Length: 426
Image 1 (cartoon, rainbow, N blue to C red):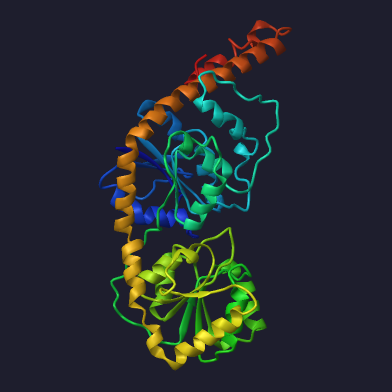
Image 2: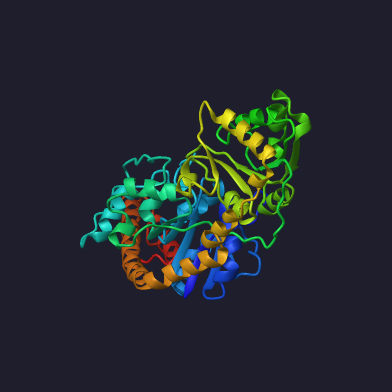
């Protein structure tokens, strides 16, 4: 089975999609023929790879069985969000709410007019003279073009089901949306850390409850905080540390990557995952903390709502948040047995193991392959009709506008050959 896998190129600041790919590609490539498409001309590790702008042409010459995209609230996924409108595919949503409308190339997208035409025998293409304002920045367009939608955050799956576009491709193809947990490597380390040390990878923002965390730390002077941030966040973090007078309790580390997070966890007994925002989610860092048997304190919101009540300590955001955090830290200090949490790792093994997630994804692809193949055959015809419509429109426009010019400026003598080079034949 031949797969086109879209993922951002490697960067110093890991995106969620990069981490997801790093965990799954080594396993999936054992059973699938995968070609990686990125937003870079550099090779992607040891996998067959190319720049995403070559994907359409390669698909025409040697068709893929399935395109797999990842979408998240990060500029690194703009190219995936753009390309899935050219060739839809299975879309893995790490977020469904975005802080921006995406790349300029689809800000005027008539997708709400185009998708209903898929099921009609006679296609009526929307006028290019109209202005189509983007909706959102909720991911309606991306969800509409998803051949099948998978969500690493179950809260987003619920949101998708409530607001799914009636003529979305997945609904037309009867392909149900599903939850796919975030894959991580389960730690083999059996050591239990009982030190009075917290680990946090939070940004120094209100949404990630940093003021609340530091205030609760202030009330527990024996506790330390190992805080992993980006170098660009240093000034703001130090300002907050000074504001809450916890300079002697906080150790900063730099470079928010999973590797650095695991190093932080080695000397910490409690992992803090405080987050109250529709634009973010706690994974993959939460899943890694669980895979390393850490006691978890997390905001009772989003993905956390879907975890068992007896597995982690759920903190309700609000007026009693600081008091609850401070009291829990006092209880941990008085009773160190509370810092042992073996059930957390067992849960991670049963739900977040990369081998398990790879198996689930492979099974899903194999099971739905006939539906994917049927769709791509129909989409090919649909796409060709769109190209013919555009070529005819451009040709008529040129011939009309250039009728008073010499013949060398006609459609036949200027743009026709260029469209042929793009495999767009009138």
